[in-house]
Amino acid sequence: KEKPRYQALKFLNQLRGSEVLVEGEGTFVKALASTSENVINVILVNYDAKDRNTELVPITFHNLEPGSYTMNTIYVDGKTISVRNISIPAGGTLQRTIIMPKNMVVAVELKKE
Image 1 (cartoon, rainbow, N blue to C red):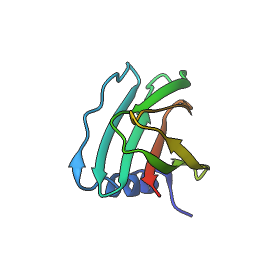
Image 2: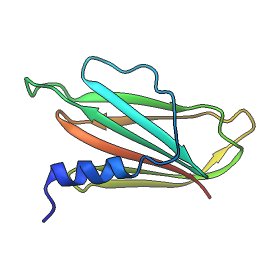
Image 3: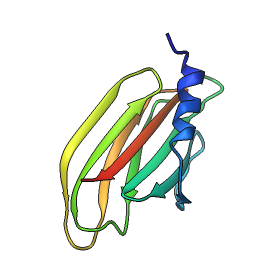
Image 4: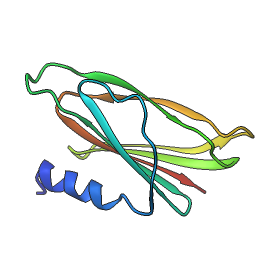
């Protein structure tokens, strides 16, 4: 069975193409993002040395092309949440909230269909 550290390193390998600006990081939650072709990848980390804070993390994608998208949220412990057929109108903004348990790493993949 893959250990969480190994899975977190696999998440980093998903970051390809051009770096994307990330704003709004907090005390515990940090992020990295990239875009390549029709895919945006975001890696979120909720690190709390005192092992106490679960965070509700808002995530917003701006300047998306209109169309249909799929968003996969993959937790380092193996849990995956997929949302398909997300319709983005002209104006191109998508907002979601992700629950980040304490000391968790999450990969978010937003793919234009």
